[in-house]
Image (cartoon, rainbow, N blue to C red; front, side, top):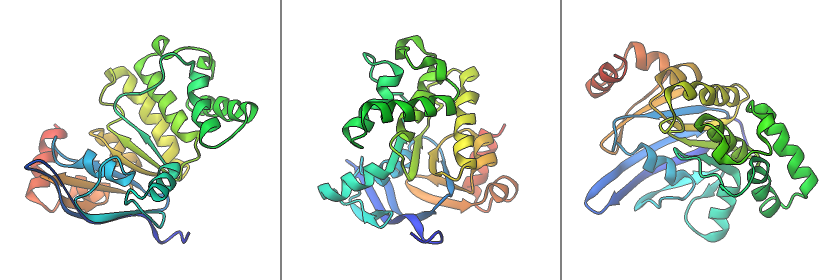
Length: 247
């Protein structure tokens, strides 16, 4: 794939839940290696947009294309997209009855068809990368929230995704555990991972994002660089939001 061509294309996407318009004719794109952070008030459509990228939500109209594949719920398309897109949620969703190492090797063996030795080697390398190699044989209940979220990130990375999606990955964490997760995400950004992140962590957005999209009421209000958003937001709605979240 050309480095200049968007790896994610979102074209005129709309989505309703009953009478609530979650997304209203949203269009944007993400290029290979870009870090896009979605910000906005609760109910603005950020998480719905993120979930449309890997088919967890299906748009009522418009289309999403990931790495040239339309996310249209044809089984071969959706499986191909999900094989290339890792996702980390607010909740860690680790299997409680499996050790950390087993949590990291299961999908590798089932989906990627790797043998036990190869999958364990990859898993241990990723645990080293996220800073908790000593937790390989621990069970999730014995880990802090920050450690569990880093395991969740490592588990997603074990599938060799081209894209990582993060849906408010620090919102369920105690304040002192947030930084360790953000540091792991910063590392991925510096390594060139394509990332779309829903987050209120404005320090991370300023440090890691190539672009920040501000959403409100299901639409994109502003799509710009962190520097411009912080220092010269164009839209009054953006200014109102930033005045509340930055003070």
